[in-house]
Image (cartoon, rainbow, N blue to C red; front, side):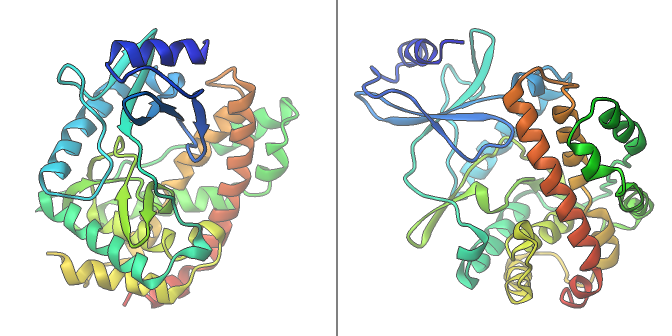
Length: 328
């Protein structure tokens, strides 16, 4: 795809103005690609959705549902960057490429070493505000996972992939995490709410003390307790394998100060259920082995993410007792 021609055509077709600067790639996206374009009218971010993701039978419906929930957040004044509508729709397509358009926001995401108590307080509060919009008592049953790790390990060996050395001696911990997560699906708190489902620090942009949430395309109904647990870890240093439990407790306490939910819950069940990283690992194994893509760029990104995700799984396993102690 001629990217410059694509954006010139897009800007013209959607009334964004005439491009006056060469489109530039914006870093940060691990699944989709983002570009900044400047026209004689304004500056925009264009998010090009991963074509391999969009081939999935459920992908289009998931994005369209997320667009509806995005409007719900907007109606409730949640601070976020909302995708622009054209002809009454948010999700657009040109030349067989799905994309979203956003107004440019001159903020930046925080690295783990930059996150302070005030950040955790604010994100804990806004997370509860998001959950409160649609919170209801109902059964939310996490899907059990059935990933054949040995198959991928054998395939990685046959293909002489660098991920083989990352995986072959981790099969016990991977199966243990998966099996124990499957065992607790009936023990999770019986609540559901619309959740962001990807609200880690890379998806919040800060401008001084103000922030905007981005990447709303994962919005959907989930268990609010599980999202809280996951994000309290992410915002306290989990991504760099260095959890600050003071920040962890600040995040949780800020959430419950503003939530309709009770803090009395089975935290151990939440600990084991918090294994969505296994699906992220499988996705990146597939990228690494070129099972769902033929892109060398995607393959290299997959290899990098496999290594990082394995490190997170091992670190998380080692931290169980300390995590549960600080949930109370």
